[in-house]
Image (cartoon, rainbow, N blue to C red; front, side, top):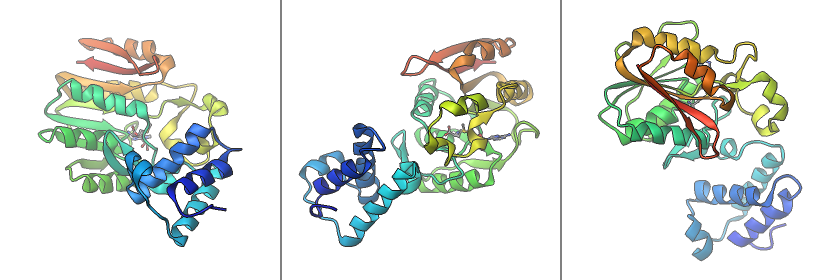
Length: 279
Ligand SMILES: C[S@@+](CC[C@H](N)C(=O)[O-])C[C@H]1O[C@@H](n2cnc3c(N)ncnc32)[C@H](O)[C@@H]1O
């Protein structure tokens, strides 16, 4: 039980109930996410704030712990996550954006893009929404095969007060709805089906397989298709940004033979994770 209804007591309760399930650092992060997202308590508030939780709020913390034990991702439980300094709604059916993708957004912003940009496989819309927010002069488009993802992405654009043109489109089988693009960006599905065996239950049981996996027999299917589409849809001198599987950097570079330049960039963990190419 909770010792009392203070922040410290809730933190201790999380540690006690989840100790057999997660490392202690992760448990503290879960508790901080709850304080931050549900109660708007900052890290400083956690030290100085004398917040007292009501009975129903304590019950809510208990329900969160039950769902965490079931391996449900904290972002789905809270219905929200932070990405590149903005808040986004996330629900089952849409991928929880990853920290590497924040690095991709940062690379794109620093490369000073302009004009019309398209994000392929937009999911919750984090990439185009961050770009539209930081560079309001851009004309921003985004596509996804999932209606559910697009509904969430549209809601996120509204919440963050930006204009993004979302379209339902299967990039592997349909023509892109926009021509004359200055920039194409994609973080497509790139996890191999055979990598499933090493993956955590919270990803496998809750996140959409459609957003994650590609057939081991054709792991570059999205990259090859998008590179082909650049022929007609990306302007000469236009830029292409990819997030990639660390195993396939050099293979994807080879697919970019007709581009003027292509560069492999490592993520903060030192793994080959991004490609920037100029047509
Ligand atoms: C790895 S997720 C990336 C989501 C988001 N861009 C992010 O970085 O968090 C890949 C996305 O591609 C979408 N997708 C999968 N197959 C697709 C297809 N054939 N055409 C368009 N989008 C597709 C999925 O629905 C998913 O939202």
